[in-house]
Image (cartoon, rainbow over all chains, first blue to last red):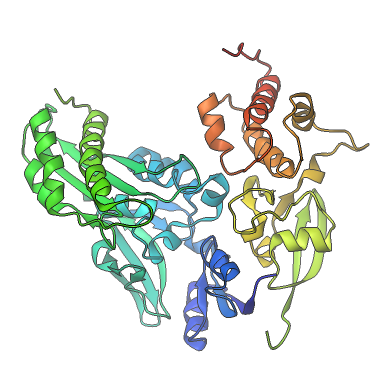
Length: 294
Length: 168
């Protein structure tokens, strides 16, 4: 038995918003792989819960008319990885969320929960930053959207009012069309691990595969919230595909990242990881685009 | 909790239609063990890390300890008991666990076998590395995993009608 004060099961998104408005102390629960564990540890014990897990309208991946890929916030990691639209257009996201926890965690964990937690180590977060994802939020006054970069406010805090529900994550066509990406997770073991640092790169090459037209790089655990390394992006954009460009790109990330010492890893080690991962992820992403770093 | 809160849940467990009035605070592990005496569903870590409480829900494996029982509404759930033949016979994967000494204390076995069953149901041949990843949601403190991997691999080749390649 869980130490739960009361459980309210939402029948629809509107119902969830109403339940959250009526119960100002209630905690929203999606897949529960964080919330239920926190209840067990005592951190969220004795709370009222509003469960949105039953809302199938918030599940699945769809392509909208303008080419935007819409991922329902309750879509599980395993379903994202298996989804044909994801595999075809943004395979990097499917690969990234396939590194979360273990198989059973990926079956219950949702991409919405992963982002609403506001933790910097979330495996989906850096890739969503590198894809310029848009967060769709439904509240009492209707739907609003927010770029993921402004959705994350500080460690553990996101731009979501108590009576708002994150309903979808949108990937605009201009973010993925022509791009290929690669995600690297560094951890002490291969499964059931929280990333020491994660790095996601998206790159678009010129027609002859000799020039980097555009590159986007984002990190998890290189700061209190997931972040982009814009200095590195500028250093590589328009540059020839070669080892010097990759090295300059990797060195430039140090201008942007600000990891800290924690019990998981030292700051210096994380800085080393940041440059090494930038290099490796960019080389892999270039390969996926059909280019070659000589 | 000031007032007890109960809910009627209707689902299919090991192929049988079931209805029960359950406490909304119950995990699916609680419901399967306490209401249906399906004690193959083990209480291990109870925080979704060890895989001892693993069950198959609508074809996919879930740790039932971090799954609210109320979410089982309308779902098809398989526990280890569901793999048993009409006269109590072991299924091929269970027999393989016995033959390969993939069981020592047995606490992790029900969870492992159900994940193996989910993998085998896909009818694909996986490499050793892929199988290790697919089985990585379970902890076993006895076997060292190699015998478990071999049992799953052997059954995978047998079900696909292929000869298992010789181990290096």
